[in-house]
Each structure stands twice: as C-alpha cells, then as structure tokens.
Image (cartoon, rainbow, N blue to C red; front, side):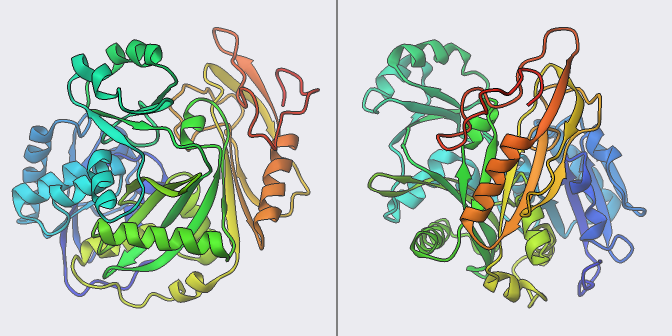
Amino acid sequence: MMNTPFPRRTRSVVMNRWSDDFAAYHRYIDHDAHDVAYLCTPEGAKALEATRISHIEILPDFNDIHRLRVAFDACRTRLTGVDRLIALSEFDLLAAAQLRETFDVPGDRPATAARFRDKTVMKRVVSAAGLRVPQFVELNDREDALATVAGLRHPLIVKPRTGAASIGVHRVDSVEQFGALLPRLTGTSYECEEFIEGPIYHVDGIVSSGKPLLIRASRYLNSCLDFANGKPLGSIMLQPGPSNDELLAFAQTSLRALSLVDGAFHLEVIRGSDGLYFLEIGARVGGGEIPFLFRDLYGIDIFSLWVRQQLNYGTPLASEAGVGAAARSTELGGFLLLPEATGSRLLRAVVPDGIAPLYAAITPKANHVFDGKGGYDKILGRFRYRGRSEDEIDAAIAATLERFQYELGDIDAPSRPAWPRGHWHDGYPLPENAPSRCR
C-alpha cells in the first residue's frame, strides 16, 4: 500500500546496490508525484520496478567517490536540483553522507555517519558515556601491530573498521596466529579488540525525534561470525522481564550517546561476566529476517518508516497506524538461517511439518548452485517463527534443525557439508545417525 502523499513534490536521488525485492522503492515513494533518479550498480538497475524514473546513472560499484560525485551531479542536472538523497544499504551510508556534504543536500553528513560505520569511533563515543566496550586498538601501522596489541588479552577479534556482515572478521587465539594474519590485512583500515565471552544480543528499531518509536531486543543463537564460518545463525526475541529491560535501557543510552535523532538502528551487545558490553551499531535496518519479522508480526515496514524520515528530514514522523500497537505487542518472533553449502548444488530440500511456531520457510529451487555469495539471502534455508515465549521458539528452532532434510549434488568437485561444522551450540548437537549427504 502506498504511503500518504508527501506535502510537496520532492526531487530525490536513490542509491541502490540491491538486486532483490529490497529494490522495490516504488513501495515507499510515489514516482508519479515525485521526481526520482537513481545511482545504481548494474544488478541494482535491473531490479528496479518503478514505471516512472526520471534518470538512472549506472556505475560498476560505489567505491570510487569521484565517479559517484560525477554521476550524482548528472542526476542533479536532470532533476534541476536535489532535495534528498536516499541510501538504505549500510555499505553506502558513508558515501551518501559525503555526497550530501559536497552538494549541500539535507541529511546525515560524514561526522554523523562515522559514528555508525567506524567501529573505533562508535566505541570511543559510548565509552565516554560510561558504557562498557571491549578494549580495542587501531591497527594503523602494520609493522608495529604486534606491539600495538601487546596490552590486549587473547583471544582477539580483528575486523575492518567500516565493515559489515562479519566480512573480513577474524578471531585469533595466539600471538603466532595474529602474526600470520597480518600480511592478509590489506586494502582497508582495521581494528583489534578483546574477545568477550558471553551471549550476544541485538536490539532493533527506529528512532524519531530522539525517542524510540519501536524497539525490540533479541538473543542470538550462535553469532554472525559463526555464520560467516559456516554455522547456522538463529535469533529469538526476548519476552518482558529484567534481561529485556536491561538491554532496552542499554540500547537507549547508546543511542543518546551516539546522538541518533531520527533513523533505523541495529545494535549488537554482549553480556560478559561483569555486565553488558557495547559491540557495534549500524544506523540502518537490521539484516537477515529482522525486517520480515517486524512486518509479519506487527504489520510494520521499517524500511517505509526510514525512507519517510529521509524524505522529510528534520520533521518528526507523524503518528503511524499500528506502530503504537506493535510497540505494546507481546508476540515474539525468531529466525534461523542455514548457510550455503559452497561448491555444491541443491538437489532437494524438505521443510518439516508439524512445527507450530514455524510460519515461513524459504529454500532455493532445485539445482541452485551455492557460489559463496549468498550472504543472508540465497542460502540453504531461511525460517521464521512466531510465538508467546522464548522457550516455545527455541524448541521450534531445535526441531527444525533436527528434522530439516536436504540433499546436495557435486558441481566440479566434491561438495562440502553445509551445516553445522561441529555443534550448533551446546544444546543442539547434530543427530549422530545423520547421513553425510542428507541432513
């Protein structure tokens, strides 16, 4: 359903790298009532569904800021000016902020974007506000890196300062492992932080005028780094109680420290032995099945709200039907993601019946080839759950892991096992009698 029309005709540029349903911007912007141009990658351009587009500039990628400026200027010329620049992918938030500053377009500027993209900047800010963060150092000089991290305890986590989706993240358990990793750290800026043992949570929602309009805390089963290394990833929303209250309070303190006034957010937190630790935050909608759970459970499209905020920059979100009810809802959701069996093709997948909380399951079509580029989308399986308690959803995820069946075929080389490589976690071991090619 199209949103309520905006008060005046806007001239907007949209940065789009997405090649799937997320590229359906016509759901959020009436292209007949407003002038919209696009900066796109080739695959992103193919995915656009709007019937009326003022202009499109196609670039091989968004890595070259000079080429982006030239392409944006071409859009600006075609539109006779630009009122707003819309960017929804975490990978594009810094570039979009630089374009806004160069061309004086309202919206987040580089200093704001850095607080939510540079992991060293965000940790310094929240640490200054009194929140715990893992001890960390910047790896600015690779030659002195060993001396730089000498004061940190192992294990260590090495990650790109502006990375996302656990791309380029490494855990090292010794000085020798760190030394062997250093030559491979090329092409970007890195930071190194102490590994904090404990469960990981994520808090998602959207802020309007400095206050959470909608906010939900969830507990991860495994971690995003585990998923990048071939293990399943799950999540369960927390039911009301002390743990949920503590996480929501921690999240709101973090948001105030980082001065997020308007926008979506995805915060990750670790519960260490001495309390909660800030891990990292993105000023964007959470990935995986998170936006689908908000839509399916509460009827709220967070992307729609976020686009409205970017189009009406500086204006509080008007009262949206259903947001208040969603914020008060006690219904919980969860998801399970099964990673790719890279180097294989899917012969068949059988989703188990009789798991009541499991309401949606997405698997690739037969003969789909897993090429290692599936991210959180084109993977072995995506499952969504709804229920009234954490235990109910937890048990449903365990049952799915035990009963989901699939069969893989070789491409040019023997296929690798899909999941898990070892245990899911201590509570969910693989059935011992599971055949090697069909689990």
